Length: 178
Image (cartoon, rainbow, N blue to C red; front, side):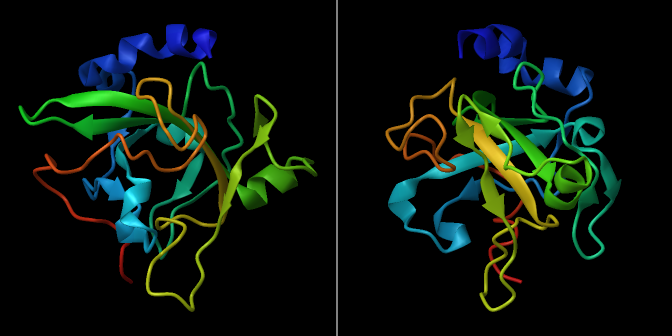
């Protein structure tokens, strides 16, 4: 974890992330557990900034984001997660990697990707529910690593009760409803 923190420390400044090719989620959403139909006490994720090249994005939402990404190096994460602050600034709270399920298996992988021995979470939309469990993406595997904000749920949990979206000034609560 120290190696990941050292390699990503520069991204505490969101302008550095932008200068290195990270893009703010186009919906400008601040993700919470509640908007995904989960208990509110699980907390939030925050606002996602991503590198399309590391995700291997091949198609914009039509209807879902798709890609060929199999990038798993947390020293150079595909996704950075920021918490909006009262003064309008953004504070880096976590890093994340996401690999598209089809691409992962097409590359010959038989097991789920892992980080520090912990398998990534599997995400796929269930059309029978009102929420989009895959956040607008094709089926994928992802792993959050809370190295910039302690998480009572665990360093690899998807949501963090120590993160809030209360100061989010724009966007939406993306993909909460279809």
